[in-house]
Structures are given as structure tokens and as C-alpha cells.
Length: 191
Ligand SMILES: CC(C)(COP(=O)(O)OP(=O)(O)OC[C@H]1O[C@@H](n2cnc3c(N)ncnc32)[C@H](O)[C@@H]1OP(=O)(O)O)[C@@H](O)C(=O)NCCC(=O)NCCS
Image (tube, rainbow, N blue to C red; front, side):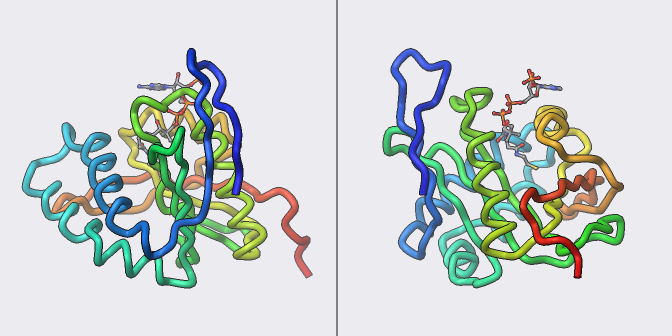
């Protein structure tokens, strides 16, 4: 889909972003579970984390998501290595999302070595394109844990605004997510 050079690296790698297919299920399952655990593992009870990993990730779960026409998964490879992924989907938003034609950014995970190096911005740009062009969206919305300060800072500088809260369960633990929205550029005006 896209090839670019990542700034700020001594040896400049090539970033390639493409849509995932069924053959990516196994690699995606491993990457998704690892990056979730690295992000939230230290702030959750091991039993809740284990329950969440068992239900949200795994080759069968990822294969089902990859086969779902209402879900698009984007993979970003740096020099051939999987460095990040994002998932965009049609989903019913929480009531605080009032924007027209809402599309959810369900997941955005950059591997730690690539944090702060521009991969997130490039992947988010592709997410916006998929949401607007492929899904006909006018509003991009997402949920982010209220304690995920880095992600909240990233979304704030990426034109998202906070519109409310929603529950999120990690295992049996009910947590509070902030709900953020961003208008999709180039979306068609309302009829
Ligand atoms: C969230 C994520 C996508 C952001 O991508 P990134 O490349 O790390 O983002 P950036 O470095 O461009 O921006 C992060 C900002 O947060 C700031 N920041 C870092 N740690 C912070 C903290 N503890 N509190 C507040 N701000 C923080 C950074 O300084 C930076 O702001 P700046 O550019 O003004 O300096 C990436 O960190 C990631 O994948 N994290 C793990 C998974 C995750 O949390 N996904 C989001 C789920 S909703």
C-alpha cells in the first residue's frame, strides 16, 4: 500500500503498510497478544490479562477477524519485520459519539522500538483513508484506557477530541476508557 523511509533512524529502514489477509493470522495473533501484554501487563491482574489474551487473540480469532468484511487490519513492516498493526471496523459506537457515519479505530499497536519514530502517524494516515474511502466513514472514533497517557497524548496531537467515557473489560476487571473522535477529511457532506 505504502512505502516510505522512517525519519530519525541511523540506518533508515523502509516502512511498508498493507492490508492483512488470511495468511497473516498466525503472525498477527502472536504480535497482537505480545503488544497488548507489553502495554497493559503491568497494570492488570495476571488472571484478568490471561483471560483477555485467551479470548481476544489467537490464530482462530485473528482468522475470523481477517475474514470479516466489516473489519480491515493494516500491517506495517519495517525492513520486512512486523512493526505495527491497526484495525478499523464498522461497529456500533457508544452514545457519546454523535458524528455522522462513525467508523471505529479498534486497535493501533506499534512495537516498542518504533515508538516515537513516525510509524504511528503513517499508520494512522492509512487508517483514516480506509475509514473514509473503504468504509465511507465521516467520523473516526476510538476507546483508549484513561490510564494510557502516551496514547491519549498521541491522539490529542492527532486531531482527536474527547467526547466521553465507556466501559472496557480486561478479564473480569471493568475499566474506564476515554472515547475520542476525529473528523475524517474528504468525507462526503451530509445529504
Ligand atoms: C500509542 C502509540 C500508538 C503512539 O505512537 P507513538 O509513536 O509512541 O506516538 P508519539 O511518540 O508520536 O506521541 C506520543 C506522545 O506522548 C508523549 N508521551 C510519552 N509518554 C507519555 C506519558 N507517560 N504521559 C504523557 N505523554 C507521554 C510523547 O512525548 C509524545 O508527545 P510529543 O510528540 O509531543 O513529544 C504507541 O505508543 C503504541 O502503540 N503504544 C502501545 C499500544 C497502545 O497504547 N495503543 C493504543 C491503544 S488505544
